[in-house]
Amino acid sequence: MLNLDPYNSYKHALNEREFALNKFPSYAKDNLKAIFISKANPLNQWPNLNEFVKAFKNIEFKVCIDMFLTDTAKHCDLIIPCTNTFESEDLLYSSMSNPYIIYNEKCVEPKHTLMDEYYFFMELAKKMEMKYYPCISKKDYLLKIIKPLEKKGITFEKIKDSYITIQEEDVAWKDLAFNTPSGKIEIYSESAKNDGISPIPIYVNEKNSKLRLLTTHPKKSLMSQSFKDVDTMSIAYISENISKKYNLQDGQVITLRSGCGEINVKIIITNRVLDSYIHMEVGWWEKSSNPNFLIENNVSDMGGQVAYNDTFVEIKK
Image 1: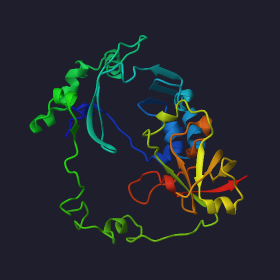
Image 2 (image 1 turned 45 degrees about the vertical axis):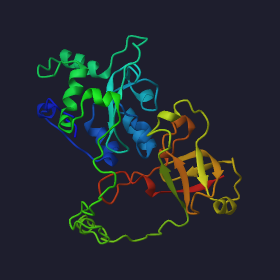
Image 3 (image 1 turned 180 degrees about the vertical axis):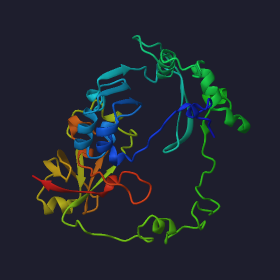
Image 4 (image 1 turned 30 degrees about the horizontal axis):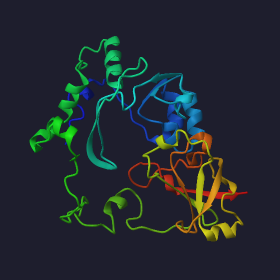
């Protein structure tokens, strides 16, 4: 519904390489001389952070664009300060968690000599003599991005003045035609079988002496933004039965340990967590004990994603 590459910049790439995220530590050692990070805080989000931070620090030249000294920025050689959302015009949308396309209005001029990332990359392209780079205003570029919406009667002004959703249906699979080979809900999955795993779910209780660490996104932020000014110790939620089993008190500080490392957390006892789980929110910074220092570097059975919730931990007083 959006044209995210209106000038076909991809065709100018002379070479490309891809590698699975779980291979980053070994891949970085032999293949990466430099890394440039924009709009991300990977040393907060990656798994097995003890190993990943070590690999990141060994890269020869590390650059990031950010507004704050994040866990990633503090390990970079060069930090380029950028404008914030009040100082730049933009369009915001997410295919993952927000079906609306939102106009972000510029409210004030930057207090310091800061450059919108859009214009920063444009100036960088000029320095690198990229003749094909589109040197146009950000507004003109945004108009090209939303051009596919015009056939739906959606204009830039309409996005600015009303609520525009890019979600075509209120109910997913309302017609009951599912995006599977059979077109049905598949309890028995041929796709899973072709990937070399069981075509039906199988419960494996091979680590029953430990507790599964379940990490979820907090309600007030997508990743680590809302924890910027939080200096308190991170919180782990356990059930009342687990608290009795380990003789733990509400508010007590304990150590959680996995095969990747250990962190100190404050315990909160709740009736909203199952007895075999410890629940934490993602986004805690390193200063507060980030649960990703515990997360095993496992890959999901299908899709090649990090299996964040396949980590088991033990409690140490």
